[in-house]
Length: 226
Image (cartoon, rainbow, N blue to C red; front, side):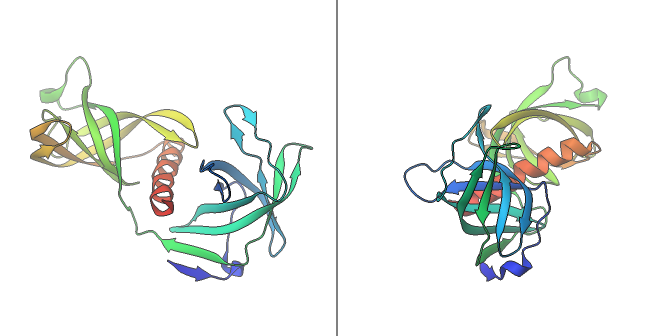
């Protein structure tokens, strides 16, 4: 981790920021969107919500902000300067004087435990119901899925269905992929004789790509902030 000057902070309107309170016992990570900023003065972000309700945020509340800029996780301390209700709920946050960042290597994997189902187009593995397994790590480029039985052969085209939780909301995605490797080992879920499948995503839908990247980056930010 190293520090950078705020003048190097290149943000895009619409990006997701994560706010975490710096005081009290509330450690929730709140998702907001950047709606504008004036360098050296303030950041304008949407007011966070809990469920469908807009939170009441007091002026002077200190937060830690984390966000992804390119392949960097950027973090800094801020304070709520003003909480506004019109023309829509938004906050003025103090602009950072000092910023810390971590560079994330390309296609960095994160450890997860996600229940998933897989459909294979290979006739030898086609079944009436999708086969199930557990995704144990993932990147924006692919995933490692473990199952009690082989789900296909190297080169097979498959579709993986899984629920991703991002910014507090659950999204069911069906992601096209290729099986790139298969090996047998031991797993926590299935014990000895478990089948590990290395999957390479073949994403074509822009919205699916956005959700997947958001999920992976959220896990990376969470891991580095704990």
